[in-house]
Each structure stands twice: as C-alpha cells, then as structure tokens.
Amino acid sequence: MTSRDALSLSRAGRSIRTFPLGHAPVEVGSHADCEIVVHAPAVPARALLVQPFGGTVYVYDIAACPGLGKRRVMPLGEGIPLGAGYCVTRIKDRTDGPRSSGTVLLDRSDAGLRCVSLIGGAGAEVRAFHVGDEPVSVGSAPGNRILLSDRAVSRHHCRIEPSEQGVAIRDLGSTNGTWVDGARVRRQALRAGAVIRLGRTLLRVAAREAPEVSASGIVVASSEMLRVMADVDRLARLPWPVLIRGETGVGKEHVARALHERGPRREGPFVPLNGGGLARELIESELFGHERGAFTGAVQAHRGAFEQAHRGTLFLDEVAELPADLQTRLLRVLETWRVRRVGGETTRRVDVRLLCATHRDLRAMVRQGRFRADLYYRIHRLVVAVPPLRARRDDVTPLTRHFLLHMQSQIGEREITPDALERLRNHPWPGNVRELRNVLELAAIDCDGAVIGLGAIERSLRRVVEPNEAGPVGDSLREALEHYGGNVAATARALGIPRSTLRDRLRQSS
Image (cartoon, helix red, strand yellow):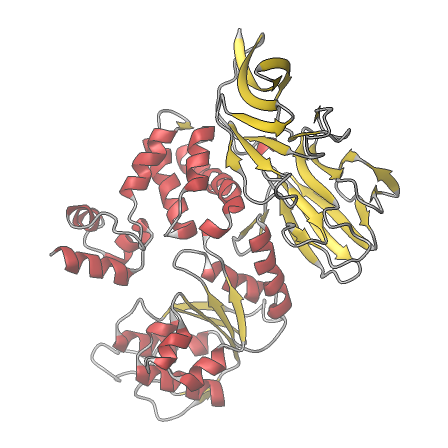
C-alpha cells in the first residue's frame, strides 16, 4: 500500500467524496465544467484551482481573483471553506501500486515547456507567452496573465493550463466562446500548431518539449525572457548602439551575442571587453590599441577592440566603470568612428556596432557627475532590460535542466528531487543565473550518488558567495583564492562574482 495526494470534499465535518490528484489542475466550484462540482448556490461557480507540481500542491483562490493572482502552497490537512458548510482538504489517500522514486529527471517530458504565441487580433501585439508549471489566465480584464484589448473577449475568457497530455485550454463561461481549430470547446487538450480564436484574436500554440536555447546560449522559457528576445529581434537589425541593463549574472553578454547573431553583422566578429575588469592603463590599450614602444612592455603593436570588431560588433561590458578620460575618448570615437592607438599619431576608420552593458543606474551617475551626460545619451538610445532571475522563476526549472545536461559529459547524469527543485525556485538568487549554475555545479559534485537532494542544494547555497548579500568572507574567500593559485579572475569566475566585489570583500576581511 502506498499513498498519493488527494482532495477530500466534506460538509459539516463529514467527508463526502475523495478525488485523487494527478498532474493536471483541478478546479473546484459549482459550475458544471469544474472537476469537483459542489451543487450549492452559496458556492462560487469557480472557487479554487488546485495545481500539483514537482511534488508540491499549490492552490489559487480564483473566486477572489479570477485572473489567478499568486499561488500558495496547500499543506496536508488544510481545510479550505467553500461556502454552505462545504470544505475541501488536501489528504494522503492510500492506494495500491508501485512506489515512485520521488525524483524528477529533468531531461524527461515532465520538464517540458509549453508556449502560446499571439499571432494577431484586434489591439493585440505579436507576442509570446509561456505556459509552464502555472496556469495562464486570458481575458480583457486587468490581472490576466495574457491581457487582450479585444472587445469581443470576455473579462475572464479562458485559461491555458498544464494537463496530462501537455497543455489544455479551459473556457471560463465566455460570452463568445473559446474556439480551437474552428470548433467551440469547453476544455480541450492542445496540439502544436493549433489555432485558438477568442473574439477577433487568434492564438497559435507552439508546444515544445524543451525550452528554446538560442545559439548565443540563452534559455528562453518565461514570458519575461520571451519579451527580452522579442526586443532583441526588434533591435538586432538596427545600426545604433544598444544599452543592455541588468544585475550582475543575468546573462547580459548572452543577450549581446544574440543581438549580434540576429543582426546583419552576424558574419563579422563579435568582440567582448569588460570595462571594469582591467586596470586603467590596460583598458585603454585593449579598447583603442597601442603602437610598439608606447609604454614599457609594448614590444609590438596591438589592435584594440574597436579595430578587432571592424565590420562586426563590440560588446563593452560594465561601461559605467570607465574612467572619465576614457569616457571622453569613447565619445569621440562614437562621433567620428575613427580610433587612434596609444602612442600613435594617425587615426584609423572603424565600422562597428557598439553594444554596452551595465548593472548600475547610469542616470543617477550622470546626476552625480560620475558619467558623461553626452555619452549617456549616445548609448542610451536603444535599451534591453534583462530581468533578474527572481522575477522570472519559470526559468529556474529549464535552466536547471540546461545546466545539468551540459554537465553530463564531465560528471555524468544527475537527477534532482522535487523538494530540491522547489528550493531552487524559491531562492532569491542575488547572483542570478551565474549563481544558479555555480550552485548546481557544487551540488552535482557533493550529492549522494546521481541524485541531487535538498541537503546538497542547501550546502551548495551556503558555499556560494552571493554578491548582494553578506555571504561568506575572510577565510572562505582566501581559501578559494589559494585554491586558484592567487588568480583573482579565476576565483571570481568560480564564485560567480565580479572581480571588484572579490577584491572589496578581501580588503574588508583583512
């Protein structure tokens, strides 16, 4: 005998019926389309939505928030009143059958990605929306995940949700109905390529078994990253500079590579340069080049990043860290598109698209006199904002899958338990995607056998330095530095933090 999650419907403390929970959402209410129908006028037509995922059961109060709102965990034994004395409770129901391993293998179908793309309709942009482990509400009222400005669409028209078959659509009693491939439906499993009609708006289903991984290495899963990639597609063809904003570790260089690869300069070179990772003397030489004998150690001439990126793209990371005099020289290049090497007398013509990135507030730095206003307006014409990982938690599972798959060649196949995966989803990730990768690398080595459990994740989280939190300092950092032979760059890269942060922490602990 084993036990499985189930819902118990009771009235006045007496159990009426038990409903087993599988992988699909269960709707509770008085409406005939609900999975658990309570025939009582006092019970809302659609009261609750119960969503199992990754070994955890979540619940949405859809009576209070038809657009779903935020979910919460539904603990065992919790009774949620429905009205008229009815109550629904999560229980463990005994059943015969084999016991599962309790692990989730991330390269299986349960880690699949489901996506809906908006392809037309009144007032609708061409956009893509992700349907992952959470249902997605669609309608014309604020609060819906997919908000449509179509007068023929009801306020809360339908819901797209995970199902046993992959993804399904559920009509929510809309006035004009929900249509799939020309047929009106109440609840219908969706296939890849299916066309949904809501009023005058069309939705095309693009269902994939894995998140899109661009050639530049970006895992595109959440609606937030889909919007980022939509911005990339829109700006890639333009010739002007782009500023990529985002916290440390969100993947700004990956976004820059995507802008290059999707633009007309894709056949040219892509040259990355970190403006905050080098000493002032070196950054000038790396950016503009130098002639032989320009300074001690300049035994031969060197082409700078601008020359190397001729007819291609230059990605200048941490542009806010450039000293004031180099900001002036950079502005001059952007005005004339000519560079002069350090120690040189002549200028050279360059044809470069400039992409810049920063985690700092450049506008505030301009007000403080720490960044040139004219340079700011030069590079701030087009902007791509990359959200932090905590704002796109739907990316955590596919990113975990992506990293573990890439580690297989070095350490072998790894599984992760549902509670460990849930811990990753709930972590604030101050170090963003870089921190997640480092945590998984440590956990994959530290885990018991081929299964990454909650303990391995907790130990790994404690060992990784988090740049926006206190994190370990002192001996821990010095041990890491010693391990990498005193190489600051290698140590910072392994810890997932900028070199400047590592140096500051070492100074604070000395």
